[in-house]
Length: 417
Image (cartoon, rainbow, N blue to C red; front, top):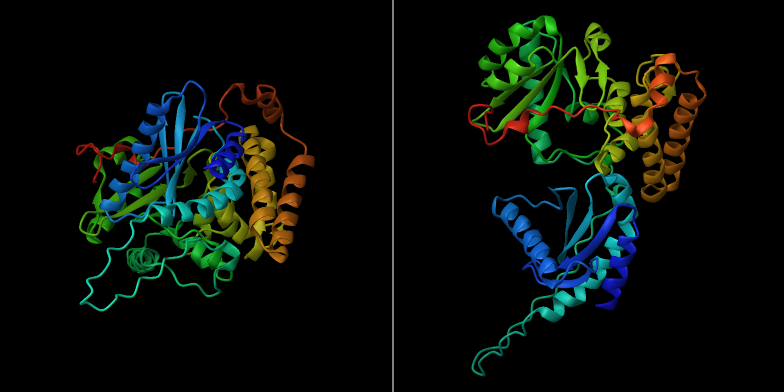
């Protein structure tokens, strides 16, 4: 177990990590590197919690590779590895993308170390009866290793869920044109359309929901339209947020639709009205880029999507077809310190992601484009409003708390599901 404990201590050196442990699928602790105040009972409790969490998800047919459990001032990050579970005890405000990047090599070591332990723990086969032919022992399965994004084959097909969502988006688009409603596809449809040559790098959806953009002037038509298409309105959510957001669901198919009216607002506010004037079928590469750059807690999936966008689309200083408008991104970041803070942080994460995950030809392009964009933001003069807010720095939160329709799950009076 010494190699496992050594690897856990490497993980503990990551900023914000308090301790870590490894357990098998049945909740048995294999190794731990927890603070002195945590005894064996604490380790057993965390191991059981991790095991029960993934067992419960598996019972619903969901193979989940990671779970994030919040408690008090801390959190538990659970990594579902091929032959065990890595439990990371950390601060509540830890930078998750940075944690993932910093622990990549450690997780590979743990995966290799756990395989012999799994084989050793396997009970020996029962000896066959002398009168029976000797059975052939089944081959021991090799460890399941996820291929890096750069090693996935070109021309990758959508997973079954994405295929279903693409077909449904097409059905809604055709019907919306018939009803003279401008319905512009966002996630997960738009990346698949806009990044046709780098689809292998995109994060395919795991949830049965889609986002669309529509003009607020057509909001009153959407209720009737979606009811005709087999959806029901989320009454409570729509009454609370209907000026900028609407939510509809199809209970029979368990599909969920988010409609953003004129603006996209999660961590930061993004005016989308210029897109409505263009009446494209999907949002632009620039808007896709901004939606990911505005994410304060950017995931590895967000960084992979950004890499795909930067590989396939050049930066431009003016709005151009099939290009990322760096002038719009720069304008947002030089007028609003909050946008600046989040975007520059995520560009730094993207550079680190490219250095570790991409082959050289893609790595060089992504890093070059990210650095050029960041440099342009840095050297452009900032507004007085930006400078005033910058003087306060991180002492005041610079981003909003996202409002999500699925916040109300578990309340029948407030949600469809």
